[in-house]
Amino acid sequence: MSRMSIYEHFHPDEKAFVDRALEWVERAAERHETKRTDFLDPRQAHILFTLANREPDAQVRLDGGGPQAERKRAIIAPDYRTLDDEDMGIVVLDITSDDRKISELDHGDYLGALLGLGIKRDKIGDLHVGETGCHALIAEEIGDFLVGHFRQAHRVAVNVSVRPLSELREIAVELEEQVLSVASMRLDGIASDVFRLSRTKIVDPIRAGRCRVSWKTVEDPSHQLRVGDVVSLKGFGRFKLIDVEGVSKSGRTRVRIGKFV
Image 1 (cartoon, rainbow, N blue to C red):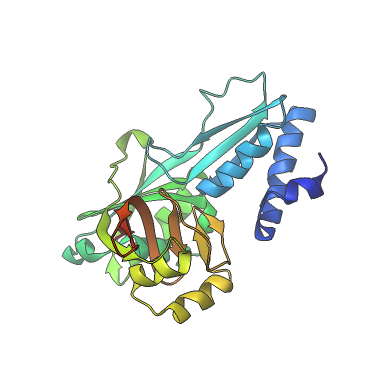
Image 2: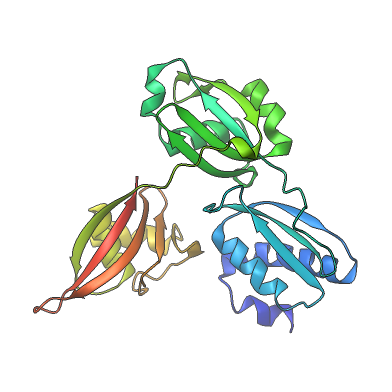
């Protein structure tokens, strides 16, 4: 299959990652090389698996540090290698503080502080935020840098240390659920209700490529959502379509939404 025919299955914005993933798979199959990636989002992981499944001489292992991990590192290797014991290079960054205000910090505060230090997003896995601090899964190679430079998160002085995965304190993602009555399953209609914005204000960022549905860029406001879809609109937040609960006598559809908090 030619590369052009492969590109047809993916969004144009994904071409650069498709090229990288293809190179990893081809090097594993043809040159017997093993590659450990940075953290991938679920869409990137899907692309990598799709491409690896086309190549019988290559295999992929994914691990994000915990059973419910969303972002994961991958190892791509020749099919004859045993990957179960391969080191994924993931450690826990334990972020604490003597300041009681740390209980007010959220996922965005911690992530913003990490990115503000010049750390690339793909070096950071899931963040588990609690009342007393945060356990951030990170690539082990940036641990020493963060211990030496991470001093503050949203104006709260913090202490950081690197700990093994065995000490990870997992915190389940919270969803603020609500039931909406919508005219259709269109992306723009449901998103406007969830974020309480007019249809016009929702359509513009979607068309500008700022919306992802299950981690895939979607620019069509009329895109039909399905149960299980996770919608992310840059600058506004994320929500999950949990269930479709039926149709009212007036023909409107009742959907259960979970907004990430």
